[in-house]
Image (cartoon, rainbow over all chains, first blue to last red; front, side, top):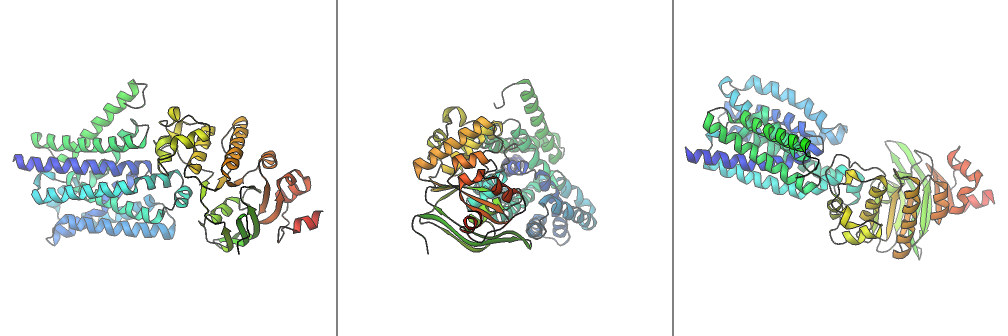
Length: 261
Length: 234
């Protein structure tokens, strides 16, 4: 039992940390809701896994990666913003997913369940989180420079199209592993709230990125821990923990004239 | 073939975007260490010329830079308002080696400004930081798209004085886009007037000539090469 809790906590910390880190870019790009919308694209993948008896998260990964590539390609061809394209795809995926997913498994797919993990799941989630953090670190400055000025980034030798593809793939990567903790409905939280909390407490980029990661890790840790004591679903508890941190930081900021602490 | 002592030769340069001609048959040369002001009404293709010079847009014709060219570029528009990034972090994107030196050469005290967020800087400070960005890796060519956008008049003059000092000290060839006739006259050697095509290329003092101003901002009269204006108006 303790072993199971340790696995869940470990996954929570690593996935929360990496989601917070990548989410800090998404909030700056005003793409935080893209992560949320993209998460619903995973639903048909989860459903296929459940129906045909293979690991549902492999199905989720495949659908997320596939849709990220499609969105990236459509973005280049149509020049429409990513959020518009994701918005167009996600409702379709949600509808298909809910139609084909067996009813008893729907709740787990929508809200996740980290309490049923084993050692292999833990190793996979931690490895994927570290890989996502490493890749995010490589593109972080390039993406921020592109946000400040696309021309400046291109004149600096940065390929915006290539970076955008890697970025979308990373978002789907994080969403796929985040689904395990909080499910498809709440995974948007993992990339949005920790970064929003960090943004109101930061005046420079490195502090912002670190705080966002730490808030993500603490939210997941607290949510999973509270779940083990209360027997409530971990997903909503992770979200509530994150919002408590958000409110605390916001109040501290309101009472303090200092912009960073 | 490269003409000796020239940093840039442009011949028959044309740019078409989405089947619309943005620039048509542009021809000019620029010597090393000189300053060229690019002038023209909105939509004349000034920024597109910069993008073509940087090879950021598809174009036809020939753009030939001098040997060992290293270009520093500062665009007109930046989105820094929502990004919590300090001056030091921004400059370190390009080089973390010469931050103090480049800030001091644009008249900023690195101790007081390094940790400030870009979003809280005044227009003049932000422009100076951008110039520091452009010169931090010691380029020999600078491209500035309206260097004093969002800057008050006093700071504007100070920025041009500083740019002139920097270009003279480091033998930098400077290309800048500006709408200010006095700035063009006082701080550049040559001017290139555009209105999709080339309207004028010559010494900057000509900018105060009323008939030339009418040509630039009125109905365009295009010339094919840099000597044609002299033939027509002298």
